[in-house]
Image (cartoon, rainbow, N blue to C red; front, side):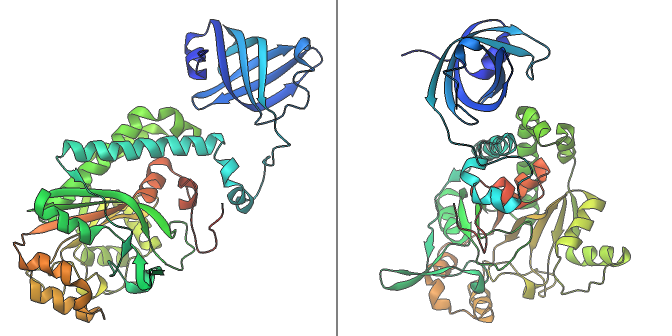
Length: 423
């Protein structure tokens, strides 16, 4: 089997004979020469063909797959500083006219997402996304967590019931999971520190730049952790991921016009304030907001502009989910936190979990649900319950923050929204 070199290897070595393969990224024909920018997963290189290849390259356009054998040399005029002079060519699969050109609408690019993924912009985003996913798992391994898979089909709500996707399951009504939290709590009693990494589904009728109906969710549950310990862990997690992206993705960040040094700002201590303090802070800057109002995109953006990464803690109980622990000093509040990051807003939601069986039953009823739907979850409070905390991180929002990408759909390979399930 013949060995081929990656483009990045040729560019690094600068000189010698090489065999490369990939796709035609750009093509420019002159009287005596044909210039082709070849692309593979590692980068691009300019390849030069003389007139003897004219017939072989006839009709071979953008995104055709080819193999090239040639001799490389430094050339400062070439985009990568290295040029490959071809002496042999094999056309693997010529293409029709490629449908993507300049100045096309966002909707069209979403329609041809299966082809747009090849673009330099999307390639850079997906490489950073891969680094973030890998770093997340590394972090949890170093923190002695165990990975647990939560089910996608569930019989009860994890958040607001109105945002659940309902479907028929062998004659029964079930839902697509909004969160792996409840099942992670069950696994926690045996493993103490657990996390899950998988898709979650929210039937939110939202058209904002930070909402989709399907997203990848990184969730952790920790036995014996209080609110402060949980926030410390979340801070370390985000700092760890940001540092990995800074070290390993400088080229991709620059492709997205993101200055890598900006990620070093995440190494500073994150600010912390209560929900009440946040409301007062926002009032001082001209926001018409009162206690009991949720923090929207504008409010979160302002807090992050002023404070950088910030934890907003201890929201009113009536605003939050049934499983959050009641504040010992103020029963109208719960021990929870939202981590708000610059450029995107809330990225992590977290809380201590309610351990009192009777309080949990009462909260479920107040939420308009039937405790019978949660019998297995309530069992966790009957048999050896312990203080514990957990959190859920929306990976797409974190990627938006670290890359500077404006819309959540652009950091997901195949985004799912209210109006889009294709391709």
